[in-house]
Length: 499
Image 1: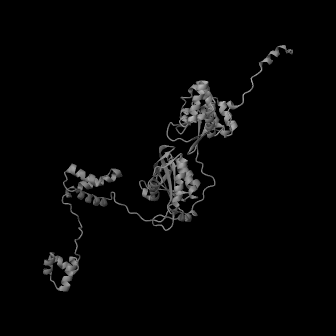
Image 2: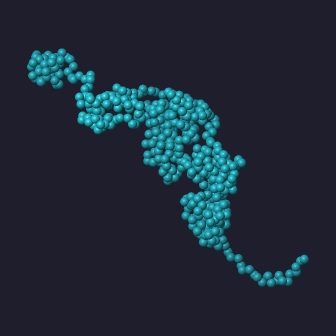
């Protein structure tokens, strides 16, 4: 029984007076009277909190906190910094907890860094989706690379799409939208963005934005409206902000590995599809079930996909390369000096001359990188065989050669001499144009086994085995011809010559 109940029961039931109850409980007579009258028994909250030690420093603290309003968010005073400055600059000898308590009260008073309140909202089905970018590490073809990943998430159902790119450029931005629309089977009428430069040219006051011309064209082509968050207000599209972290923690741990970016995107796409069976907290139905309801509300996609290709004019330089987007791409050496047209796709580069496709390369991102196809240089190297070992395209290619090609080159050089051996070996490399790599390499291995030392012998294997190396019979195994009878040449002396 607590003392409040004891006092009231003893007075009402047992007739104890105030003096007796005061002696029994140790409380003052006034406190006993309050309990008997039924008034509140506990201590009252103070209307004003005094700070005896800190009081003389309050104006200083207020000045610092008010000054923070004009400073960057991440460079404002923390309670710890306020305490340290008071100690170092003003000789404060009170406790840090007192400073923390006052700083918290002052921030509320001046509206600095106060916690925000949010309104719970329910999205309309099939109306809005949120868009954002994230960054993650992946291993592509054995090399660790830093990648960007695009996220689009339905506000109503939570269904989402994730795709990797090497950059956040506008071309990748558009390509990601195109793939996302195909994944969702339609276009959301409203898409919500940060103030990213690929879409916004200038942020105006309030909600006004001047959008990039190319983004306006893209938006008009797919007939959706854009909405942009206030600066530094990521919570306005909190669903996709959460998706960026969710995707990184769940789809990219452990660090994903793939032979190509396309293979990596296939892995991520499968996980996005599987997420459709997930049931989010507070929802009664699964993501895919909710999405089926809103899919009917989406805008239909245009019959033709938006043209997301950049076109440039260029000239083939003396190294048989064309510069595009600050990187170089090779073409066959016979086209040196030609004017060409370059088509830049988000993932590849195509080079044309007179309507003919001269070359296609995987697109490079960065500056001053070279994409060299060794096949483009083989005819020139056949004319200059002594440049073979130092040629950059060949040195890059040799890193991926099977051991059999290295051995065949050494075998040719021993049998024919270095210059002729290299020239003949280049003829073997040209076989990759007409035969599959596995067929050429199988023929090379058999040629080494049978000590064949010319490209004609390797070609003979490729032509007559038709991929079945067990059917090949080497020339050395054929039956020998009988020795020639040279006596017949003596009869030629009596043959009459015709005028």
